[in-house]
Length: 151
Image 1 (tube, rainbow, N blue to C red):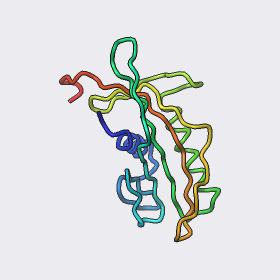
Image 2 (cartoon, rainbow, N blue to C red):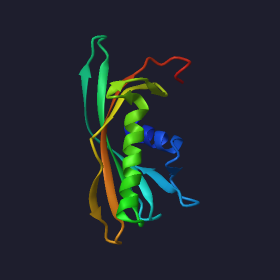
Image 3 (cartoon, rainbow, N blue to C red):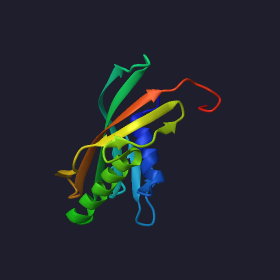
Image 4 (cartoon, one colour):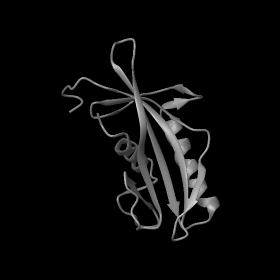
């Protein structure tokens, strides 16, 4: 199964929120698992505690937690707005009015639903004075049988 942080990072790059592992032209750099000291404006995706349950088919449904952190040197209003835009993008990617609308496949992993907490929040100001906002979510996903289509 793919790492949830890597898959969410791919969705954010696809959504135009930044570039993977570097920033250019005022875009944010998007990273996973570790937030680098540079560049100043970053989006970092972390995996958080998860659990699995059996579904009616007998397959495991993984409830994979993740956190998106947005760090920047812009105003608090702009950084929070960026974090909120990411939160809404991820929430609406697989749901409409809180109900699943489409599945997303990454390799042999199918995402049935991405649920985001109700709002992003201010986490802290780091030692360099950069503000950090976070948005937390849970991805409901399943392993798919490996076929020629998923390889």
